[in-house]
Amino acid sequence: LFLRFDSGATANIFVSTTSDRNNHKRTASNHNYLLECDVLQQNVRAGQINEDGHLFFQKEAFDASQSAELAATQFLKAIQLNKPTPFGAYDLYQTLKVVDKINKRLKI
Image (cartoon, rainbow, N blue to C red; front, side, top):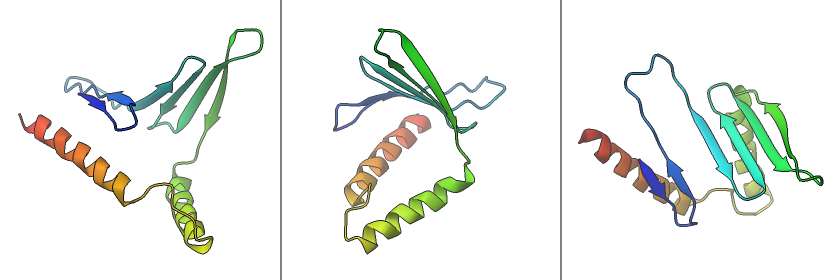
């Protein structure tokens, strides 16, 4: 499934019904930067070109149990500081439209 977002970003989703294991990776890149996230393992690998023109990678690992706490904290801080949340109702609407399209494609 190929998705194109309002921002111009794109996504490819591949589903294999014959795989013997789960695999969920997200990749984002531009001319100088690469970000790869293994969602199931909660690992992120970031690569960027250093001053010498070589690709340099840095790895980070995250605790999945902290994701919900972080999201709730950001939401409450936005309310306390009277600032917009990172994601709004329009983002939710756009996400639901994409989910609906995906569900329709999977039913074919």
